[in-house]
Length: 467
Ligand code: 4AD
Ligand code: MG
Image (cartoon, rainbow, N blue to C red; front, side, top):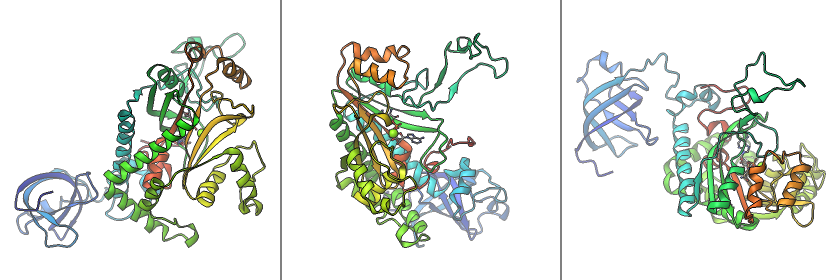
């Protein structure tokens, strides 16, 4: 902004506060900083001034002058004010004071008008842009994979059904099962849990692709890290092995963090302060060791710790935490699935930085992961982040047709129906790898918001689909 020198400007926005019938704090959504609009005393009658209430929208023209008051360099000396939309102060749910996040979730339709969500969603926007920029600069092709599919990409059965069949008088086969031939698509369909399988079709033609779209999981997990509808970024790269995959994922995460630091400094600092204030209520040992911006810079400046699942189990088993039985799920040994408390112990207590775990037991991972020579593990990798737990899940893919088919049969994945997927292995198969980054978990990490419901505008969770 130029130095204030009496230039005339017209601005539009929403009133945050109106003080002494003289000072309007006006906000246009571009930043949490308000513009102070100074109303000339005596120029307007009381009836007009009464309409300048919190959240009324106004259009005002005036002169930009240096501000005498504290807290701002310049202000607008209004020569003309027009009220575009009144806002009944009695009925407007947001008061110019701090509201709890629980309360704000109930009025999510107005949440963007608060400083906290203003900052969060401007950063969310920036991160989404950074995702596209990162891959576009590397010449990846952005693929739009279907939202409605007939397959279960993760083989976990956590799908929302998509159907137009009636609930009563549902058409049935002779054996009593539902006759999906009568359904809209002529077969059973669901909302996608991942665009990966279609992504692999793209990668085996374009080389490098990525997806970025909504995914749906009907898992009944009521936690601060799970949504039923979340956005996922899934790059898939031909000719990549597991190590290439990890390198790309680490570079990618650091890139988008750097992007936020470079472009959202003000909003990050606002959220850092908010977090620090919130943590003041916690006992010392529950507070973060680093401030938000400090934490992000620390992640940028350090390599992620890489170790195998097998080594991680050893660390967990031998930890005092486990020996003192402080885990809700005790560490029983090799083969067990890691709970988020275990992941967070490794990241927050043991290594104190992001961790990439590799080579998990094949029994706890999806059918498409490449089988290692030991016959026990697959070339999987999960990235675990402080305060979040798993933020990325990925793997090198099984490119060998016979091994893939065998694994699908073992895991009861319908081989026949997936003929199109298996064709990539029939016609010019190549080593390839990819991963999925949960976008909301990434936004959580960057903004420091502790509940995933506060980084997506209209969260979908068990028993909740308001707005
Ligand atoms: O580990 P997931 O299930 O992996 C896949 O879907 C693979 N197809 C990815 C790939 O290799 N292309 O999910 C990937 C990431 C998780 O690490 C997590 O960050 C996020 O997606 N995620 C969720 N985020 C919010 N709510 C949920 N219910 C999530 N489930 C997974
Ligand atoms: Mg996973």
